[in-house]
Amino acid sequence: MKKKGPNFIEQIIEGDIAKGFDEKNLRFRFPPEPNGYLHIGHLKAICLNFNLGKKYNSPVNLRFDDTNPEKEAKEYVDAIKYDINWLGFDWDKECYASDYFDQLYEWAIILIEKNKAYIDSQTSDQIASQKGTPTQPGQNSPFRDRPKEESLSIFEGMYKGVYDQGEHVLRAKIDMASPNMLMRDPVIYRVMKVSHHRTGENWNIYPMYDWTHGESDYIEQVSHSLCTLEFEPHRELYDWFLDAISPLKGVRPKQREFSRLNLSYTITSKRKLAQLVDKKMVSGWDDPRMPTISGLRKRGYTPQSLKNFAVTVGVSKRENVIDASLLEFCVRAHLNEIAPRAMAVINPLKIKIANYIKKEGEVINFEINPQNKEEGKREIKFTKELFIEKEDFQENPEDGFFRLSPGEEVRLKNAYIIKAVDVIKDEKGSITEVLCEYDPKSKSGSNTPESNRKVKGTIHWVSAKEAVRAKINIYDRLFKVEEPGKNTTIENDINENSLVTKEAFVEPYLLNANDGQQYQFQRLGYFVKTDNQKTLEFNKTVGLRDGWKK
Image (cartoon, rainbow, N blue to C red; front, side):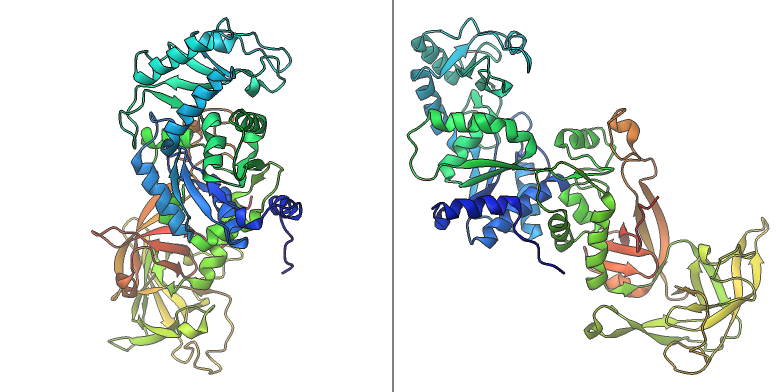
């Protein structure tokens, strides 16, 4: 495979080094807000930053931008840390924007003293009405020229909890006629008398994201602050805030943007994902149908498959929507390499081999993983009565049906060639059992003329005597349209058949499966053992073939 050249972010870094930037000062960061679980949209940013750290042997910080206590919680902090570790990444420093609240407050005072910020006592609606449009300038606030002494006094009162939410805000004094509307005197601080998951009741005011982000990067000496494209208009403000607290010592961070990861049939908005959880349309953030890292883990995705997906998608500046089939391709390719093979029957139909005379049955050698011969073989029990899939038998076969049917031969995987000779039906006419005959000289691997005889179909099976019951959860896409919520609410776009649960028969080998162990169920797909302690349960990860083809 042809080796890829450096992506455009790497080219920017290489260009900075060529201009004299000391490579020893490189530092990156991944800065999630702890207001939900990480999802597939975060995967690209995680891999980009941590892979850059690995490439340049540079530290990567994990920083929680925790400036909105109404929606943030320690639960989300813990989940984010777990997911990143599970992906195989380690951070240098664990940081929180809340660590810098004192410094940010002191810098805000300096802005007021420099006449670069003022207290606005209008309502949020009044402020919004003065913003203007992309083609029309905004209007100055009547408080824009408020004496700095008065702004300093009110700001101190906000800090001490004297004022209620909505009475005052602190705004940067920039340019109400700027073509970039983000530069039109953005709010820096607002009153919020809300308990914070780390600072408790210590603060009555909280900084806005734009004010916090660049200053936090500077405090941590992050060299390259990498954001998704929606933050490109914020770069001008990012730089303005850094200029406002100059002179700066050490590394001045620079913001650069890349396209976010958008996936078809998927939403990557934490707000909308939270709606699904709150309205109990899913079982939680880690529901296997959710595009969260924890949901994908529960579904049976591996860290390597997700990292392979991120590398395959690549880093670019062009927004596009990645087909969901690519994500499934990546997990399918990895599981094909590592997953042990096993037999399971989800829609069982019993067959009886009339001429099979071995009362106790026999042992069949079964290759653990054809992709890794070193794993060797194990034994599976073959008996007179077996379960096969109902779909693998047709009494009146349609054209192109090459599985079991009256008078036609089919091979039982790793075992014998059989043919159906009769059917047994219940009083409603439904088939309850199929009588078969087998060729005792056709055993797989016996290298006899009979065993080498070509038949058109091979089907899987489990011994009816040995089989154990298992709960199987079969998942489909959570949404039935490519762009959920585009033309209606996301609730209306939910796929009602996104989860089907069945009781299956599996070979007893799977009783010893560890929680989280992936398997390839022959001819059915890839499945993962759940942590259900009451019953044997598996989640379907993905089928053996692309299920997204139209």
